[in-house]
Image (cartoon, rainbow, N blue to C red; front, side, top):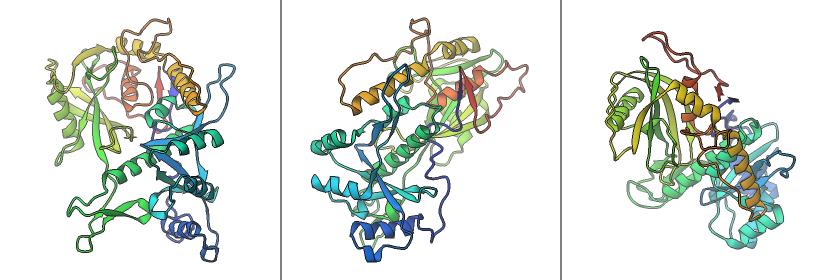
Length: 410
């Protein structure tokens, strides 16, 4: 089976593809002024050609979603973001004592063809609100990681929805983490429609911008023996193996970070480092609201493994044939369909339980002897790109960088 991806999951955000010019009614500044007049119900101050506004609510990092179709004839349901018109959102929240203000909304972007500007907002725990959204609009707050696994990577619209949800979660979690100035300790206030914050202290007024945490992730390759180094963390489910990874430290290049992390975790010395691709990763802990995974092929100069047990549970060399077999027999599509059905049941408050494929069953129905992360993760595409390349014929053989719209063969 081949998996065709125009971009990694969480990339390809359709609301960020073009930035409107300053005086465009869809631009950040113009739409924010228009939003304020709508919220204060002052029709006389509405700018001409004012856009429509839609809001995506989040609760504890979970976006509000809907299910588009019934599960029938083997066709899995599909989830979509639960956008609410600004006026409806204001009414619904007001019924539950939540005030909708311009400082509570964060600008996500626009779709020029629809003349719509999209916003995100965080709401606190409110059971009555959750119940009303489910009963009156069939909407439910769902964990972003669950949506990630449930996303059909052949559906470009859902892929775009996931990227929007990831962007919204990253911004809102950053807002929650930056409520106070790191310089003087006073409160910060949102500026530029929530795209930055500023210290409220008139003397300080320090500007704070959204946090991004870059991570290198690498597939270490033994060219001569046609194998790769994969690691296991203690939190992994049984039989799961993945690429090595680590945060970039101040003052080092990406290539230096790859070599340092590989040596620290496994004792393997790396020489040549080749860039593959990158992926936003907004599903980490709340303290790291958006990581950027930057992936590389790393070619080993030494082969003896010395695992740092504080970093990894284990690390082993795996042959190309073993990796191909793991990719060939894992039921990634079935796992996606089960997750989509789970989301549908959550939205409809169905208590039916479904089995999980946490061990990635092989097509025979037996547990696969080993497996790697699914197509939602950049590690999968690093591994599958290598596995489906022809064996290198010499020490100068290089891994080809995947083109835009790359294909991972399973």
